[in-house]
Length: 183
Image 1: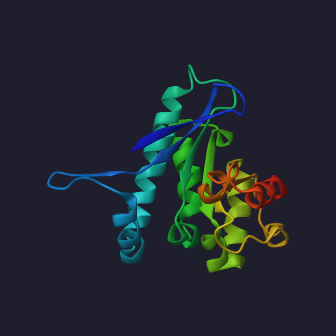
Image 2: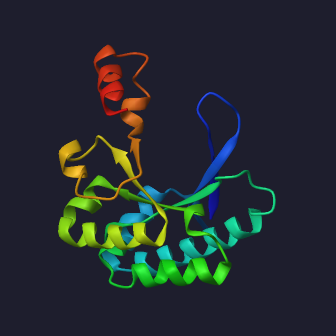
């Protein structure tokens, strides 16, 4: 598990971290997520991997509590299969309790596609997770359905605009306008 720091806008203060799973294969070296996440998702093993990532991220965040700034949050990606898993809410509740981590110190990130796979199930699950007190983010926003009206159905705290748009805002006025509109 690698934790990528997240910084506040306009300053150098670390406000959180995103927990990212990486695979170091003894023969191939670092295998990029693009080469193993899809296979893990299709085989169903992503649920076990996701449970481990959640547990490890919460354990690490609990260790950081003593010196992390107020509001520091660790963010974990939930795959579409995890979001559809009936055990995800009890898993999150149990993991938070086991590590003594306040729910507001955990953010769960879901892609637009995961929301759209089964919107009714996603809405129910996200509502239950939100009621626990965890933060909900839509990751890679702008690459899929991107309906702001549709997002009203979900308890979303944050939209993470896809890197495709963010990387082009200084080069393309149309892209910059779209990002301003989303913000």
